[in-house]
Image (cartoon, rainbow, N blue to C red):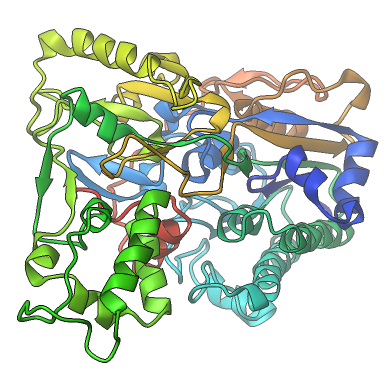
Length: 548
């Protein structure tokens, strides 16, 4: 068995995290590859998050071309978790197919439902727990061969079992890839490991767990190299990750102060943290009578105090629900929070009435509610540019309480997105300063707070390459995420697409461009799987409280 070119995706991997590992020998395979070939930081795209960055890596295009700007796709004011029917650019394995090559792909994000090509694909993030694979029936074959193969954890991961849980996911990805490589004998292989990101969100700064996960990934890379003997191997990440050392900036709160955002209170959801922080809880049951929580003396006061702390920390509602449930306080919360407040629900951004708003902080930007484009747009097209200029000027001026700029760049979307899907993007792009300022969309009453995520994504990931196609003496230049796909095409010896935004990196011999046929759009299907939404919410990627 032999693979011509292998890509190993390591989510959120970056050199600062590698340097934190308690034992660098845990990544000896990765470091040996770097010593044999090349290794460098890899600049990610905007926004540097899994759902949009991996498609940029494997298509070589910006989100304005491939169509995925975050974990959510918006249709007017409604939203759904993105999936492969939103993807408008060809992945490298489809280009390989058009050049007569076979591919094996495991755990690539945003690839469900899969398209047909010569080879095999097991989808990754945003796919349902039991996804359709290519060819049909492949998932059963994988599970028969490698045992338990899951996309998501079955519940909250406890610290005591976390290392074993993460290792299980990592090993199943490696075993699945080796099985597909043996069965389909591909020229191109792609396998992605997600737990290097997950551990940083769920147990930030836990260096022992970090070492366990990176060690497991390194072991699987070694096993794949031993079993598949690829001529060329490229390791790459979609972004970096690290401590959030600045403030949390509640963008919609700022926009509300400036008159851009209108709010509404609907009948769904828990009370806002603002209501809790301002002491609007009272003891009592469903009848609303005064008194403590039945059987729990002082619970109302204790709960109000604890939830007030959570509010000041910016705890998201979905994580609060997990904490409440884990502490067995669900009934206590129901008793302490008056019925009318529960029914009234959370104060939310009113997308329909607002002139401009953040609909999803992961998009890194502000959407203008434009008449003629958005279903109930309130901004006249003649006023679009002036409103956008006002937004840019206002956001450029924002400083933290310490006097530091919140943003390193505030720009029209054209500065970052171009292509047929760019109209779906935000109108104003907001890039946090050094990605140390954490942006949220929720309304908390205060403009700033302590970051609700101790660690957050960073712009710089990593790339390592070694093998027959790699000229280590040529170096890496300044690698960008968009350069990975054209570099893979060069390593495979196939023409890259003329739609790609990147270029082959200096260490490979470039191939020509070709105008491949446009990727045919498919009818969009919804991502109807609660496990997907729960997982993304638990990791802080989406907020279920937003107006839908």
